[in-house]
Length: 297
Image (tube, rainbow, N blue to C red; front, side, top):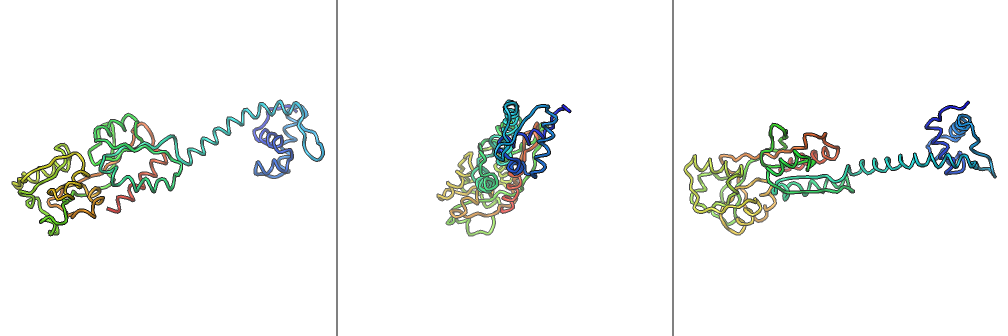
């Protein structure tokens, strides 16, 4: 009786045309030879035309079968394309993983995390852009980044941000600096010292400025820069005392004396993702790797 063909029957038909035997077709379909033979018989009955004949122990397709196979193959080519695309997505996700972060984190925290990430997704393509807080916020809101990481405030009414790590600013100086003999420093110890600071808009600088004003501390001279790495390089040359985040200080630990500062200048590392998209498995993986990395500080 002629009836609509079932997908499994079509799959068996295609496998037999490609391999020439029901045994080989069964291996291709990961099933048994009797199952393939049954599906083939069902399809031939449903199709209402002869599809195969036996020739020297092999199934030989009829001309009608080959015309049908041409149509079937077009369908399966589309499915194969889908399967290949899924395989790529399983391995490395859609396109590139676009990461935005502040410069200090790009230099300190991100490199070892990316190394661990690529062990799990060796074929992945990554884009890492280091920008200021406003650029990161605008970028993630407009879907230009899959994930952003910042030591600056990101949260707005339109964007939620998760705190990944909390820390305190540290003082950095040359190991031969007079203050390097101390176990820790109080902001009053900065009186008359050459101070290397971040720009006035930076959270660490604003907190430090408030604490110096509260204790009546006046530095002897100041050098202002917009990068924590520059502060570390300058003080490593013996140019004063700086206050930076502990992530960047750790990068220069062999060249610097690092001391805790009281009262504390608090630091929060926040993570945000585009609010219009559900985070992918790749983003979830990177987030967990970041959490693990911050446990080392």
